Image (cartoon, rainbow, N blue to C red):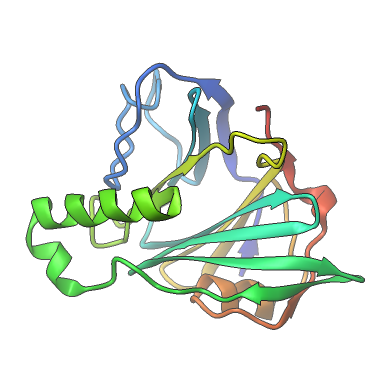
Length: 206
C-alpha cells in the first residue's frame, strides 16, 4: 500500500555540526526543537555534506534518489547499503549500474569499532554512507552524501521507503508510478527500466 503526505521538517536547514550516521536521529545533531512525528523526512546540509534522515514507525528500508541532469543515483539502505545508477533514455530511465551491496557482513554488528571502521572506509571510497537496519533504531535511517565540488553537483532529491516490508511512502510525492518497480527497488532489485517523473523530485538548494 502506497502512502504520501509525509511530514517534512525544516527542509535544507544549514547546520554547523556534522551528523553521526548511527541510525539514531539525535535532536541536537539535527537541530530539532520538538519530538518527531511519525513518517518524517529530514534534509540538512553543511558546507560539504547533504544529510537525509527518515523517521518511521517500523522497520525501514529506504531509497534516496538524487539527480544530476539525465542521471539518477539511487542510494539504498536496508540490511546493507548500495548505490545504483540510471540514465534517462526516451520516456524511461535505463539501468547503467546495479546495486553492489556493502556493509552486509554480520560480523560488523558484533563490534561498534569494527562497524565504525567499515563505515569510514566506505565513505572514503564512495563519498556516501547510510546506516543498516541492524545499527541504531531499525525505524530510522540516516544518510550522509558528500557534495560535489564541480558544476555537476546534485540537483534534485526524492525519497522512497517501506515500513515493515509492506507500507510504502514517497517524498515529496509519488514519483515512480509503477508499484512493482517501487517495491523491487526497495527490496534491493534493479529493473532494467523504470518510469520516474523528474518533475516530482524536489530541488536541492546548494
